Amino acid sequence: MKERTIGNLSLAAVLASYLILRYLLFDLHGMKEFPFILCLAGVLLIVFTGIIRKNKVSPPLIALGYIGGFVAGALFSYDYGEGLNNLWIIWMWCFVVASLFGMIGDLILKKRSNQK
Image 1 (spheres, one colour):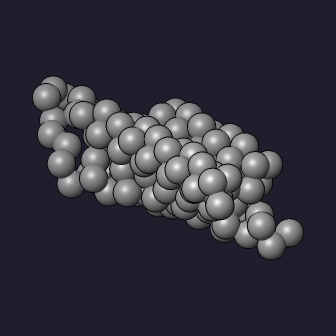
Image 2 (cartoon, helix red, strand yellow):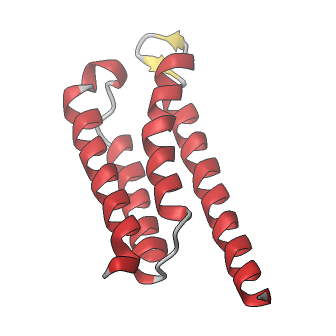
């Protein structure tokens, strides 16, 4: 159970941030479906990497990518038409990059532990 604590905390962080971003901060982004799809991807990744495989680096970075990606998107997005902006693109790529860094970090840690 102790090995899965990081995964469980990261899962709680993603779900809580989804509820906040989707419902409380809806006026900032105006998207209904995209936050759910990104949250679902985050939940599946955290369940696989953090709870099933018991990795230590991936789950927090996945959660950080979801939350930080929205913050970066809200800060750096611009409108290019009525009701159109690029917040979702920034949010998605921050999430993807953070998730990949986490998975690479777990591979490096596993390789180092196998060498010792």
